[in-house]
Image 1 (tube, rainbow, N blue to C red):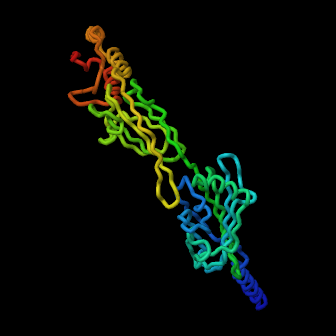
Image 2 (image 1 turned 180 degrees about the vertical axis):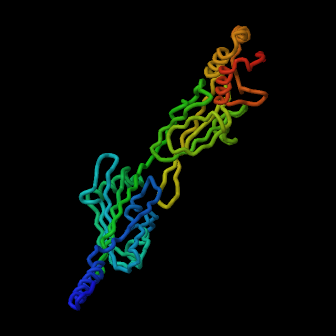
Image 3 (image 1 turned 60 degrees about the vertical axis):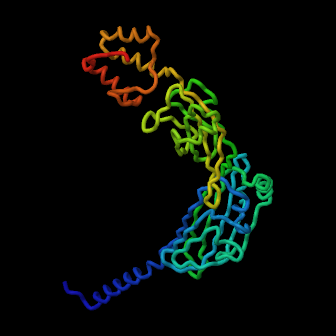
Length: 360
């Protein structure tokens, strides 16, 4: 199809206008935003100086903030607000307990800032730093006598703003530090001196921290004190993140009927600076029952699983007052409770596989 000179000129004008529109399009798109992320210290207790890090003479690491501008170099300020909800029900959120605004600082594509970098004479200086009077009074009343801030959730709200000539969208992030401030460790079960504890006891204790260390020792003949028992090797040593622990039926030394054991729990309290404090319980002892009912129950199951022709053997066991005691052996080797249960299940399904039954 032939075009006239006028039609060709109009097509070029349309193409030129479209091209101009495409060139202008990036300028009409919204600016890329600042990306802000944070990492916090694994703490469960803080001192008043840890929270008031701007004025503390010996501040400890509390948080790290990573800022990414996507390759741009900008001038920025950062605002940090701290809101608090105490375990007692009190809250300091409006206004925040603490508010901080920094002076301007440079970001060349990326920058990492910790709380140790903020304050007078530091890389990131503060221009505005205020504390809510009610929050300040509460914190001082609790923290100065005890040395620790009151339990609760402490939430930091961070905003990074670009104050350059062509600013990017601000970046924000929130992070929370939960304080428990545990002060006591109380052992609940087995109770001290209990003489009828199962070979697989459920240990329980009271501690409002996050991590604990459970240690169990055998009290050997000739050891007169619980402290002396803890000088030997542990029967079990385990780090747990709960306040209960079920003694396993395999993979560890078995607790033997008739023997006495000593145990304690240490609770870990995470503090600023990365050093764990420990709260240790008193020592407690218990004795595994000499005639475990669980083993007697397994004996009954074994009788039911075997051919009735072996009933006289079990009658003899009961007539002579014998009960299962100590380790259970199969082919001369110790067998765990779960493996013994599997063997019983096999016997039930294959009673003819048992050729003889005798008492030793």
